[in-house]
Amino acid sequence: MTGHDSGGSLHRGLKRRHMTMIGLGGVISAGLFVSSGKVIADTGPAALVAYALGGLIVILVMRMLGEMAAARPSAGSFADYARTALGPRAGFLVGWCYWLFAIVAVAFEGVAGAKLLHSLSGGIPVLPTAVALLAALTAANLVSVRLFGETEFWLASTKVVVIVAFLGAGTLYVLGLWPSDGAGAGLATLTEHGGFAPKGWGAVLPALVTVLFSYFGAEIVTIAAAESAEPAKEVARATLRVVWRVLIFYVGSVLVILVVVPWNRVPANGTDSPFATAIAELGVPGAATLMTWVILVAVVSVMNAALYAASRVLCAMAARGDAPAAAARVRASGVPAPALLGGAVLALVLMVAAFAVGDDAFDLLINTAGLLVLLLYVFVALSQLRLRRRMETESPELLRLRMWGFPWLSRVVVALLVLAFAAVASSAEALPVVGAVSAAVGGTLLAYEIKSRHKEATDAVA
Image (cartoon, rainbow, N blue to C red; front, side, top):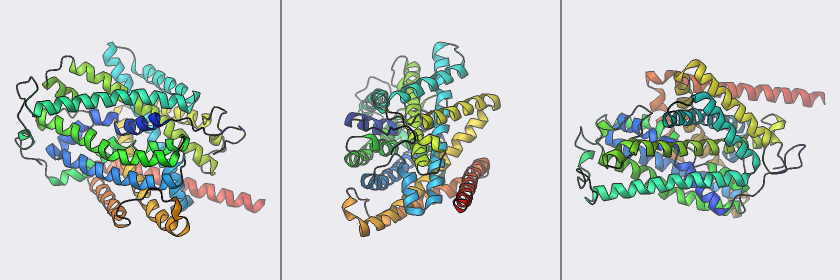
């Protein structure tokens, strides 16, 4: 993709180790360390089923996305695939919804990171710190895609080391080899406090919104693949690795938490980490401080990756006329600076608004973003169903990576996502979130109609 009036284009500056860690880092979000407490509180030990089901959906969606990305690598990722498969209106909607999701994530994580630094330092002001975090990561992303890759490599490496150590300690605890009073208790805690599903099995589907929001980020590797040396091969590797990453990092970690700490003692306030509670139960000194630093690393990693993804998707949309033309400009260094800065400015506005209105505004934004995930995944599945048929007929040689069980498994994913959406939307407390999603989708479609009519009028005059 070449930028307008710049003479620059996106560079293939990401190495294999960058791609590996971008894939790992995208899966291990700050949501795993904190939001897992809410899922456990809402479902009990059945949270394992929620994370396994959500993980299965992510694995299948990533396989579908990988099939399309291996055939046609694009920085626009699924927005481009929706446009090709389902038409320009769908591409416009998916692109802007994903961009909005990514910017909300940047703003939300920026404030969360500032609050963590506030607690660690004993009082530095939150808003200026959030702005400083945003400015630092924006500056790093402005330099080059290589610097983004290096930054994400080290942030993701830290998260992986912590998760692996946590899983190792949990395994020793279950086997009775850890020096702790409850060591060797086995899996009895999964059924001792009201059974395996104390809130009923009906609580599992609504929990998928929080679960999928935690998983969302795995797709960034398919966006980054367009700037790697071997896009098709990197996508294939990344989508194969996501299977064991999901099973080990998420399902494994939640299992360790539930075995070490009874589910009704796991914190669900969105501030305290269930990981910190489990580590404290294991007798590790300074558990709360340790996890605060780890969560801070996860927050910065999510901000870094979301800024990157938002800029590339906006740049790709602009190149196709779905966003202001200035956003398609790329520096000689290979960075789409206007798209990056535009996203950073909106994230800044959202940060300031959160402090002006209060935390309720951010809760609404982040829940809206979580519901948008379900919608975006539906579009990925529908795009893959259509494009697979087309490629089988027109260009079968491009199908380097294939979706399993096509077309039935793709249809099952669509059905699961629609069921989860309906389960959430049917609850009375979800009304504001459903209204916000409807407003976002309706506003985006209205913008598309205005753009299309303006273009028709301009073409008619010309």
